[in-house]
Amino acid sequence: MASTFFGLTIGSSGLFASKSGLNTTAHNIANIETEGYSRQVIRQRADKALNTNNRYGMLGTGVSVVSTDQMRSKYYDEKFRSNTGIGGLYEERYYFMKEIESYLNEIELQGFTTSFDNMYNSLQELSKNPESLTVRTQVTNYAASMCDYFNSLHTNLVEIQNSCNYEIKNQVYRINSLASQIAVLTKQVNTVEVGGENANDLRDQRNLLVDELSKIVNVSVIEQEMGDAGMKTYVVRIDGNTLVDTYETFELSVKPRDELHNQCDMDGLYDIYWYNGEQLKPASATMTGSLKALFEVRDGDNEEALKGRSARIVEGEAEVTITNTNVNDVAKLNIPSQGRIIIGHGEYTYESFEAKVDDEGNYSYTFKLDKPVHKTYPDDTEISVGSDVDYKGIPYYMSQINQFIRTFSEAFNTIHRQGENLYGDEDNHFFTGYNLVTGEDYILGNFNPTVNADVTFITSDQREELTSYYMLTAQNFKISQKIIDDPSMIATTKRIADGVGANDIVEKLINLKKDTSMFKQGNPAQFLQTLVSDVGIDTKSAKSFSENQDRIIAEVENQRLSVSGVDQDEETMSLIKYQEAYNLNSKVISVMNEIYNKLINETGV
Image (tube, rainbow, N blue to C red; front, side, top):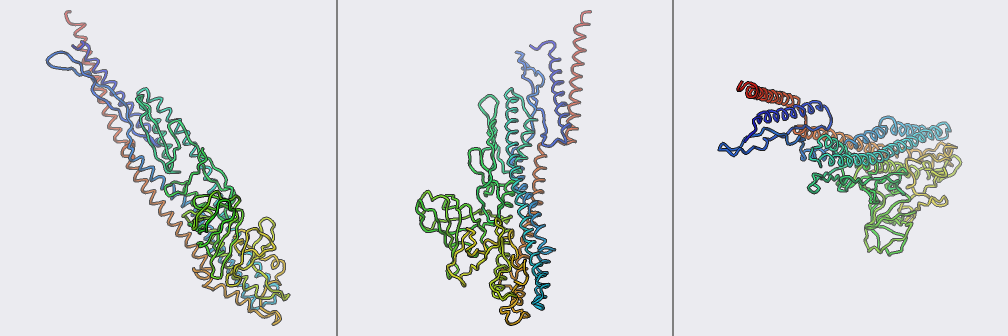
């Protein structure tokens, strides 16, 4: 049988429940602009009924608040994070592609085009006055200006590569910091929830960190019950590798590469490693996020790494020769003089290499390894050298610029070497490169199978040997020092004995400007215009993808907020609802008070 004061108990339970609802609503309203906050609602139910042992059954005992729940959708969380990773990838691509485009646009605006036209205008003047030292000096200066442009372009592209490299390091530090914070919050969540409470605000903070992490790398989260104590495991994985396992974190570190992957890479490019030494592969097909974009821009060579096959390689051998390669043109060769080589599935380091070309123009490359191979490889083993990243990044554009410099310089030099200077000397190079260590000009030799079959070039940089145009890059491109010191060294005619006014060699050099057979894209200017067009298309594509992905993320975020977001109108209604409930329960207690007053103080008086 119920107590005489049973009604007060029921009324007070309603007051407490309404007060909890008001407090929760007030908390929602206070956090309406808080980033990452999820709306909370109280879950209440009728208290356990009281058995009266009478024919009218059981009596209700009021209401109790079971929990304060967080309104959140796991499906929308996963959808948001997967799209945020893609958004981070496109956003980072677009940012750096704009920088690359701004430098390469100078080719058409005021960089290469201006200096190239000026050089050829001065050659036109030279064809009219071959004997004039003033005009010869102008040719030298304008040609040097064009070389300076390419030197500057190389410097600018390396700066972008360096920025990407530095940002990779920062991103790794940020990933580790986020992992540590997630592990700490997981411990706090379990400490609260083991007592039966819901750590909603702590969960919001943890989810916000995971959201931030998902923009850097692709993230997956698994949360499971840990026994019957109310504790839960919380595992965060990036690209399938465990970063956080409840309270334990597995940190990443960056380590400078010991060797270059591409010829013009800057020194000290970072690779990422797990705590156990396993390398993280940000350029993998499954990776997304801004970290992947940084590696793409920094290392992307459009999958144009040197590839070929070898004959049987016996264990203990320290030289490897590959044939049937995808690069049969020195001008397109972008591998470093020292670097890594992948034989089958084994990775080695080579100290130098040499190339040989046969009568039919087929190339073979022999690499001298720093250590012998540790196993025997069968015939037709696939071999690759350098990086092989499917994106047009810094290495790709550097390779294209180097291809232009080498092809144009070799064509120009081949004609120039056929002529005699004012002293009657021949075989003089006009364009060359310089050794970055000694500062001396290279002695460039033709690497043309139709001229000198079976010729070999070696990357040992020995001055007594002819150096291939492979050694010529945008970084060291210059005018021959002999011509800089004395413009009389410029050749204008095949035979100076025919007169200093003869200009047959100059005319051939002038015709190179319109030579459409030099590149598959057309004449020299058209080659670089195509390159500018490529980077423009790539930048526009990155911008379009980034903007489209932003719209998708906004739509997914709206869907997520429809569940977890705080709605001002809805909370206003809840405020009124709980206020009315509180007033009604207060009225119940007031009525009960009057009844008990009548019963106790006035009955029988």
